[in-house]
Length: 243
Image (cartoon, rainbow, N blue to C red; front, side):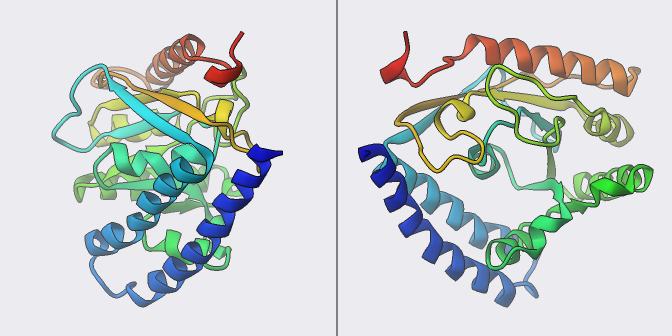
């Protein structure tokens, strides 16, 4: 019961702040993208702070190598809403590939639009891939990293979705490396669950994976193997309840 009450307190704090930043997101749309990104990611800073205060949920990150100085494609495991927030704190300014329906959400979507995302129509098939490749390449050339969740949707811990090769194809076309990311956020903040478990989420940022002279399928397979192997090494239950 106490965990549920703490989760309710978390949302009672986040909802009004989200409304505020949603309105701000509309007002600052005329500003340069970098300025908008800095302003709206203050929402992420607050949300992670409030998550730690109310739910006792924190995080730590381990880098296998220092991040490259030039933009890359980030391919991350998708288990929770948590990583969509926290990766903004781990990597340089980035454009997140997301379904366009999210931009239509009141307040949240308005703020999201200011973060320079790449919104795609998942039902568009080949047209969606072409848009990803053209918009993603443009963002990378402009100095933005590109964040993609290759499974496309949140997958419970211990399971894996079908990995799309779109992110690998983008990196190949843009001639940039791929940086894989593994984590266990779904253990603490499950999909479609209000309750949040206290503890520490582990994030592992892998060494850049070269793309020159390789196929998108080969790159995607290496990324999938690395992510799933690292996820299997991370705690599969909150520390306080681990067997």
